[in-house]
Length: 158
Image (cartoon, rainbow, N blue to C red):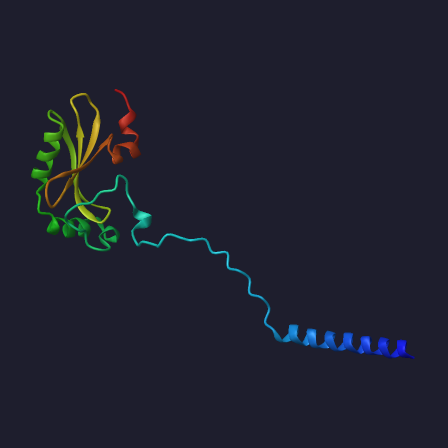
């Protein structure tokens, strides 16, 4: 009889623990999955438009100038430029004596107002010189010039 009492007691205890355990599990919230978030760099409004080489000028271009039509953009940038086209061209020609100016354009480079002077050297090599529209300092020189590379003109032979 003692064996039956022990067996009954053990069964009752097992059932009681099972009920309590299942109740405790039912009441506790499920474990939250760990977020698999990888660290990201802060989003910059100009990141998609980042241009190479990285240029830092002295005159900040107006926000949204690149989205305007070309006439309005040129007018806005011209109003901010302290260096004339002639002075920017002189600075570029001082860097490449004997070169011929093909085109001079005022533009927005990485949020700064910059003169882009496209030259052809005496050796027929194309160069694009970026001149700060505020100080007249040469900011960058690109062999071939970005516009010529896109059109394929820099690699053509006569």
